[in-house]
Picture 1 (cartoon, one colour):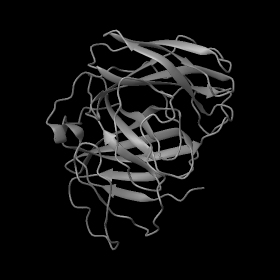
Picture 2 (tube, rainbow, N blue to C red):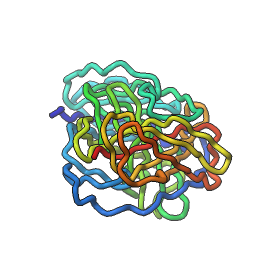
Picture 3 (spheres, helix red, strand yellow):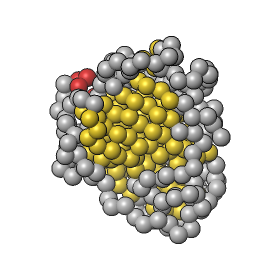
Picture 4 (cartoon, helix red, strand yellow):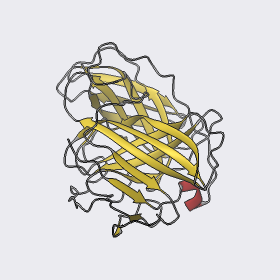
Amino acid sequence: MATAQARVVSMPDEDERNGEKASKWVMRPGQPPIHPGAQHERCYVTPMNRLAVSAAGAVLIALTTTACGSNSESPSTASKPSGGSSATVITPTPSPTAAPAAQPFNVGGYLAGNAKPTFPAGEPGQVSIVAQGPLKKPGIGASLPIAYRNNTGAAISHVDLSATARLNGKLVGSGKSQGTTPAQVQPGEVGLAFIYFEDAKSMADTGLKYEFTAETLPADTSSYNTAPLTVGEATSNGSSIVGTAVNKTGKALTGPYSVQVYCFAGNKLTADVGSFADQNNDVAAGAKVSFTAALNDTKCDKFTVGVSGYFK
């Protein structure tokens, strides 16, 4: 089991960095019940649910723009998160871990779309948050799109992210991820996710500071582990993203098959949209699923889309 390490990172939220007001976000479908055959601890049948499982390691990343307070350890300098803010890292235990080489976005080839973002290297030895978009508040809850890099020494799956939000030091919200893309992430690769905050009444449009925790499982083909499909084609018609994805894992998969679309302006995350594939039954190795993800007025000229299921 990997050793958990904490990092404290100074980074303002996206709206504060860019002076933008949150735009419309598209809510996800409802959360399905627990799958009766799940073999992982508290493993839900869809990425729309929190996959709270025994982790290979947990990482705590506190985002704040104020001084980190007194600490006996000497601070080190972190990679600069996307968005232009500086970051200072305080390592509680001085045990430096070499990070894997930072890989280009979508080096695994699971995703499709016309967005080609680049991201910072992130912090070594952990699942490191490297970018975040603006908080979206559609009227029911709120969503925060983020990007993370797997800077551990092993491939990961069932990536489960949780977060708290503070305004002027006061806790005003908590939330959790509802699936990540792609479903398995190799060392040095980037994954995308969003944090859903169910109650956003006290969450201001700007000035929020976030604290993230990441939990993962080893990436393998065991039953009900998350499985990435390879999106072979994806087209935007202005109102939806339409496409197909192929099961290239060499194993049979089972649904539901989550579809996640992330929108970009250059390297900047701007929004996320979710849906499900048209198929829900088992998909053999080499077989396809199809999908239509409605944008619902979300501006998404540049996008990337991924599809995830579960190993049978």
